[in-house]
Length: 211
Image 1 (cartoon, helix red, strand yellow):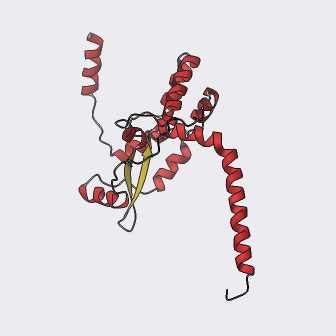
Image 2 (spheres, rainbow, N blue to C red):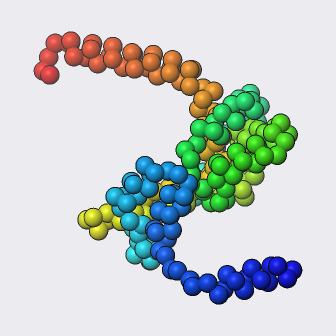
Image 3 (cartoon, rainbow, N blue to C red):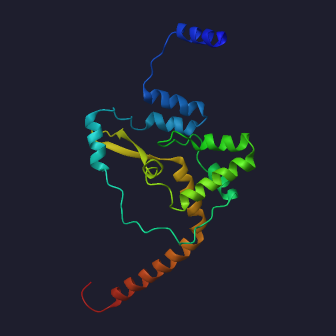
């Protein structure tokens, strides 16, 4: 306890430097070793001031909506199972320093927890959780937090605002896994669909009449 008090006393005695959120973010990016991202942040648009006017601009671009009520029930449907090997692979695919969502959890936090602790048990627990999210059976009270996102604004040179949405890492990780599992099937589907559309366009173009 005495060591803790000494630490607090030494911290309070040090001169305090005040940095803006933008400066703190640039320093954090540099400390993470993301040199290209640090250079890009120096040239990118600045974060908008958190005031009522900018909030109104963001809400105009992303108006609040009620959660749909007539969503088909997933009960009785065969669920896509996400294997733990894919979870670890997709977890490692997040860019270094990837921003957290509403829960404040970063992909790097989860990866460190999996690697530092007993990897098998931690990874299995995470996999079970992601499969539960993928099942569509998450309680309605929790859904807005997992499916929601932080909405921030970047100031544009013309006085406008550019909205950036940062979703929760668990939803993003689940989406990465599911997308990877259906990638081949989706490619086949859209290849046939594009081929069909192309045939229709060619037939219409070859029909006699005005073009």
